[in-house]
Image (tube, rainbow, N blue to C red; front, side, top):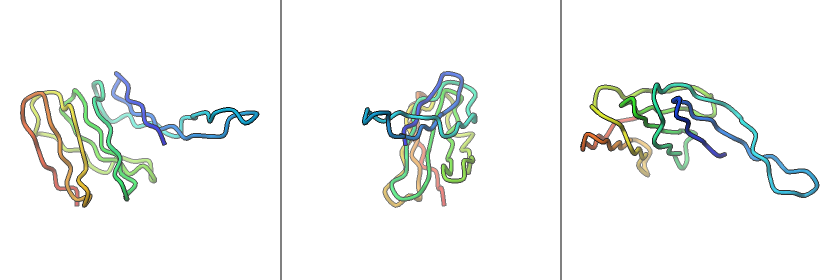
Length: 110
């Protein structure tokens, strides 16, 4: 699975499929999430759960269930400026976000 972020606030997931005549694999769009209002800055995949975290210039951090293809939760009201980085911890119970406002937030995702 490969994810691409777009300036319109969407994230597209692409699935690898075999290429023709033993060529390299081709990536086809599997689904698209349109849950941000400004450019997406970072995408992070959980290691053992089907979760994807995204953050954007709209100050929002989102958590998606990529198996179900839906938004699980939005973390709003913390950052006052662009969110530049998001990471899910190894226990997959916390989400860290860092913003251009010089704040770091730990969000409980249980």
